[in-house]
Structure formats: C-alpha cells, structure tokens
Amino acid sequence: MKLSNYYLPTLKEAPKDADTLSAKLMIRAGLIRKVASGLYEWLPLGLKVLKKVETIVREEMNRAGACEVWLPLVQPKELWEESGRWTYYGKELLRFADRKEAEFCFAPTAEEVMTDLVKKDTTSYKQLPFCLYQFGTKFRDEIRPRFGVMRAREFYMKDAYSFAANDADANDWYQKMYDAYQRIFKRCGFEFKAVEADTGAIGGNFSHEFMVLADTGEDAIANCPACGYAANTEKAEIQAPADLAINEADLKPMEKRDTPKAYTIEDVAAMLNVPTSQLIKLLVFTADGKPVVALVRGDHELNEFKFKALLKCNELEKASEEVYTQVTGSFVGFAGAQGLKEKNPSVMIYADNYVKNIVNGVSGGNGKDVHMINVTPRRDIKVDVYADLKMASAGDKCARCGKEFTFTRGIEAGHVFKLGTKYSASMGANFLDENQTSKPMIMGCYGIGISRVVAAAIEQSHDENGIIWPAPLAPFDVALVAIDYASNPEVKKHADAITEQLEAAGLSVLLDDRDERAGIKFKDMDLIGLPHRLVVSSRTVKDGQCEYKKRTEKESVRWNLDEAVKKLLQAAGK
Image 1 (spheres, rainbow, N blue to C red):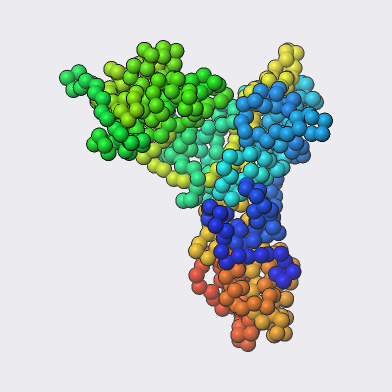
Image 2 (cartoon, one colour):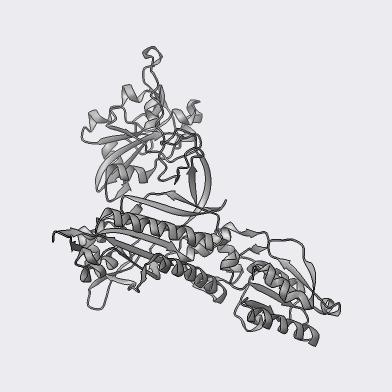
C-alpha cells in the first residue's frame, strides 16, 4: 500500500482533552478521531488493528467450539423487564421510545437478548451444552467518558454466552473460555494476568478479569507472591487483623473538640495531631432505597463492591445530604457513629475489620465543626457487622495464606463470568431434564473489549517516539520509507521491487512514497509503530544498499539490496 494513496492524517500534537497516553497516540497516529464525548471514528489504520484483534478472537472462539451469531443493538424494554434490570441497571442504560412510543434501549450488554434467543428453540437437556458469541457495538452512557476508547460510551466488543444443563458442563465451558482467553492474549503479544474480579452489573457468582499489565493501567492488582492468588483491588480478599487485646486502663473518656473548617480527614488529623489511621470515617448509603452506615479507618477507602456484595442489594448509592442528616442527625462530614443506634435503632451499622482495633480514636462529633476524641469502637459504637470492606492497599495480607500483597497495575481487556441461573430463571429459559423436570439453564458470560485491546496494546508498548505494535496486531508488518521516490528512478525501482517481493511472501508493506523530507517520514513511521522499517534512498542505492531498523531498537544497520527481502523475512519470522 502506497502512503500517498492511504488516508493517514498524523498530528504533531494531541488534542488537550486526550487524557491518556493511548488516546494521545491513537489520535496523533491517525487511528481514531473524536466525534463527541465518548464517541470515536475509527480511521483505516486503526480499523486494521481492530480487525486483527477480531480475527484472533474469532479463531480462538471457533477453536473452543463456540458458534457465532449477530444480535441487534436496539433491544426492547420487555426483555429487560423480564430480567429485572430495566429499573436498576442505572443511567448508563440509554433508553428511548420509537415512533409508536414503544420503549427500547441501546444494548450495553447482551444477556437479555441472548437468553431470549436461546429459550425459544432449546427445550431439552439433549440440546445442551453449547456456547454462542457475537461481535458488536455496545453503548453505555458513562457519566464521565475518559481514557479515549478504553472508557468510551460506544465501543466494540465480543460477548459470548454458554448454556448448560448441569454444573459440570457449565464449569467445563467456563474453563474452555478461560483457556481460550489465555491463548487470545498470548497471540496478541501481551504481558497479562488473569485475576479474580467483582461481577458488577452483569451479576453471577464468580469471575476472572484478564488484565493487560501496564504501569499506566487504570486498575490496581493485588498479587500474593506466596500462594499465587491475584485479584483486582475491588475483589481482593484481605486477611482480618487479629483482635488487639484492650486494656481498660488505657481507655480514655470521650471528649468533644472544636475543629472549625476541618472538612477532610487530613485537615482533622492535622488539627488534632493524630495519624489518619486513628480516624473513623462514617459513610451513609442507600441499599435498594434503605439507609445503611459504613465505617472505615481514615487512611482506608471503602470498597463499595464488597459492601454491595455483603448487603446483597441490587443498587447501592451514596445517600443524599438530606438522607445523611436524617440518619445521623448531624451535618455531612461531622457525624459520628457513637450513640447512633440509640437515636436510630433501625439503621444497620457495618464496619471494616480494621475499625475494630482502633483505641482512643477520632470520630465526627455530631455537631457543626466538632469532632469527638477518645472513641473506641468496641466500647462506644454498636456495630452490627464487622467485615472485609476496605479497598486493598499496601500492607494488606492475603486472606488465603496470610502473606503480604504486592501490587501491579493493569487494564481490563477481557472478563469471564459464571452467571448461574440469574437470567435463565427470571426469563424462563428452561429445559426438560432426563426425568422430564423443567429446570433453568446454567449460564456463563465471556466478554472481550476489542476496542479496549487496541488501546491496551499501546499503553503496554510504546516509547517517547510513538507506538510499538506487537507484531500480531501491527496494521502493516513493514514500513518501507522511500526517499526521493519521485525524483530518482533507481529508488523507485528498488522500493517497488522490494514491496512486491515482501507482499508476495506474505508480509504487508506500507510504502512511504510521499514527497516529504526524510525527517518527517521517519517521525511518522516511529509514531505509527510498525515492527520493521526499511529505508531506500539515493544515498543507499548508490552503494547498492538499504537501511533496516527494528522498531524496538535504536540503531539502524545497512543491508545489501539483493539480500534485503531475505533478511527482512528472517527478521519477521517468516
């Protein structure tokens, strides 16, 4: 492909609103353009990478025995009412009415429509198990789209669903998909890790995320170097600290302290000259509309995913200021849980395990600009449930073996779920077993963000000059930079001949035949990141040579023109 005929608008600078490295490089390298918040156009170079990922995924899904289908992007309200998600999925579900006032949504996922498809034609255990998959556009109306195509409102993904008559077959399909994902990400050329994860809005009882490892990744991963357990910090199970023995003589009476304009944990800690670990942070939520209270240490972050799982609720939201005041009888930021059960016996108080060991700590004083010192939860707060409610952080220990976690960062590119009967039971996707008894099918769900994979590849592999594509995902294998292509017949002859021979041997070539300065051509080729670069110029052909440089290396080497094709095929592993 000649670059003079190819639509590849590169930029020297990225737009100011590009907020990640991959977004900046994808825009500068001419892979994508932004249409609106969270909406992107995919240009020819970007689409070639997207399709390469799609091909790898399709081949491995077919190898695992799954069958491809094509499902609609627009889905009727009735299906989502059957599953119960129409009302509680949240504002990310874009709802609309057609000209007949019938209500629909743009698919953020495909559990409902896939379950509806299968239940129409599957009636017997003899037809099970099987797995269906599709590639398609999804839309989630994110409140704050960010990170380029990694958290866009519209995105392209592969989603698959398995249906089984028993747990053994369901587990077998889960393992098949897990293994297929391992092969997919290896074929993409990634460093990655499969970690246990929260099931989120999809539901189910078990899941793994496939994380592409990158220092710039949006997700933190807790790793246990001893037993091998790994999970994202939303899911990571933390060993509860041993209960400290409390000496009654060490306990001091509670006292109020004025803390004017101390609105943050750090402000309060500094004003009272105590570490943030001595503060007790009170948070009020509504769980399916019912107020609940959570307590965590001041230096810890509440893990809302764990809290929601503990409460077994569909929706967990931070309480409004009005509800906060009704529950605590105090101002936001100054409420304390001491005496709360006496004032409001019906409210449930949940506390993280680490709160239990605070002695003579600091809590809100239940008054404007007031905090209470010498609060000891085991004495002063009637906690209903202590549980693992904190986000995993440095110093935490693995709940399975007790060794301290190490932390890395990654980008979620794939997710596999054990759904069980969450959707089949509510939507009537039943089958008759050997005894002619009707039972709900056991489901699994398996997604890969195809467009996210492209961005993840860039986040993991780049340098100061641009993208460094892993070879399996590169839009072209070779950048052939022809300098003086139009003005020097010898340059044109050798560049065309090498291009023709490489393409005949199975390599794709982007021939830069533009009438541009050499420096501009080199910068563009480094920016778009093709694995191999060959330079043919007036200077090199005079010596019967060309220059070769691998994208991952700094220096170029000279090759004889008559050996260039053979050597490049060897360098490309052909």
